[in-house]
Length: 164
Image (tube, rainbow, N blue to C red; front, side, top):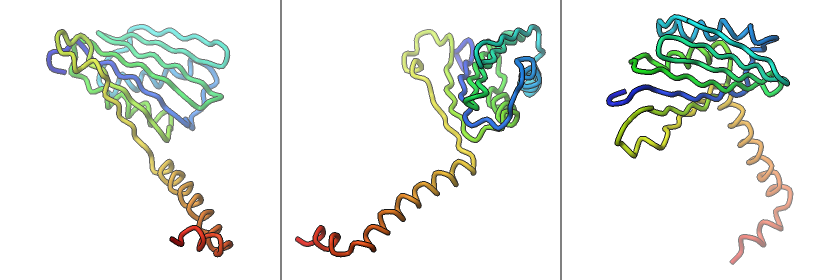
């Protein structure tokens, strides 16, 4: 975080296995994220509107906001820490374990970097869990097996196609 005022991390959690009945149930997630980097929780606010839980918390020089959609098994998280060398990756890891998500998309932005233009483009990082890799590989195998079955079932069509 050299020459910047703070770090801003935007995280998408897909296929969340954890389910929450009310916005207050997200309170332990935010506490766990802050405790992962030894930050106190000063203020907490939650809202419920049309299938969406919104929770915001304020800490010393930072905040975290969670938008959780139970129907979609999706959570959008916004973490900002000002003037600190705290590890946002540890906060993200704690939230990943609690949401039980199998896919994450994270975008990190350095805030308050006066004068460096190249920083304006955010850095994206995607992590896949083992289960997601297995599903993707299975889909590729199914697609290949269908085309191989077609070749074996109709050899005359394929011979005409490859003759020059």
